[in-house]
Image (cartoon, rainbow, N blue to C red; front, side, top):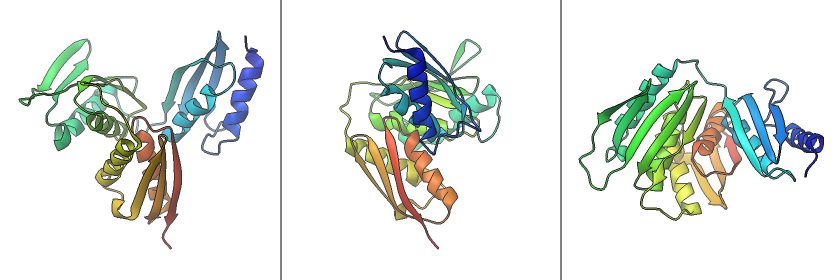
Length: 241
């Protein structure tokens, strides 16, 4: 059995060598028991969260991760306000109009739109402590990924747990991931997606091209991280001068 102190030191060292994880400003609590590593805390952005999980799971002795990491929200919002914002975003997205939409709050489920399409998916949304849960099923991976991105874009979201099943099951490919990232970039009103090239290999997304500011460079990277199934993002975007 792996030594607890050795595992924790190895994980911490990996975090400290990743510049997108700021342990000094955003400390991560860690515990290791019976092969399971618990990570807890609030991190700076989605990249820090996803990278922490990816770095930790490959440490020798770690067989599983209990993920209690949340992202610092752009705006502190009550759960009800987050739920309303996610609901509205999903309702307004034409690519999801074939899905029945339900919201769960205080133990009650309300249907806000009943789909008249066949086949149709069902998306149920709930929010607890700023964490958005997407549950039930959709008919393709593109819908699952788009719903997740829209939930992440709500300023108060601290995490998105995308539990949507794809029915019938659909094989995933790098091309599917690339298409989903492109769609996210195109829908982001703060970016000019025409100047950004996207490629994917083994679930690692590479962004190349031009943006106007450093902020847009970071926003584009975060959009890619928001896409379900992305394991890493290589950001080679250049800022126009």
